Length: 268
Image (cartoon, rainbow, N blue to C red):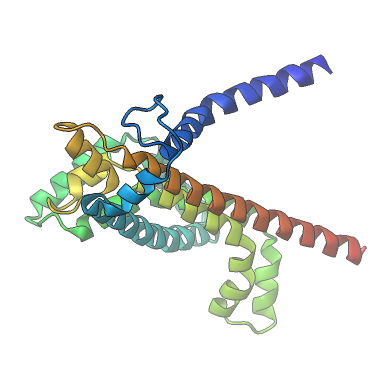
């Protein structure tokens, strides 16, 4: 009993350390003070100023464009790669496993510099396309690692049975495999968006000069000016959006597990 209480206290303590700074930021997004920690009264003025700051709004738009675009590409390629590796030979599977581990453990600055050198060596210009490639390289491995466990949990005989009953491989892929691994696909998609939203290093090295995201915009202005107070409102909105998406995905996954367990109980 004592061990359980101590274990829970230990977990809650670290959760507090993780989320307390975010909660403080959320609270002080409802006051117009330029400094966090100074309360000047409850107000929504920072949220009004946020939408009036055109440069920051452009950075927000660019951030979400590159995040969603790279997440979609990474999710498609990562899912196809995971499915292909799952049905490949052992040697090909091991090679794929090694290749997907490298972007996860490799330093982000190494990826950014190597991609920048590649672009320059090919005499290409830094455009949205080069930035998209960089973000896909950053996130595709995480999609693969989220889809892979769902493939391992899947009954491999189901796909083979569909083929034996006359289903074409593409039809069996859409009707059998994708519904089973959908939670992993959604998890990989959300992680890809999250990684892309707060990326700075790859974005700084591979973007075109006129293209600013939230991270590069803030880095640009803090060299000469303090961070605008309305950034607190922006981070609060982003946190709420991500939180709602994660909770929604968790509820969906739990409901799917409950339905599966009810079906099994009904069978027996």
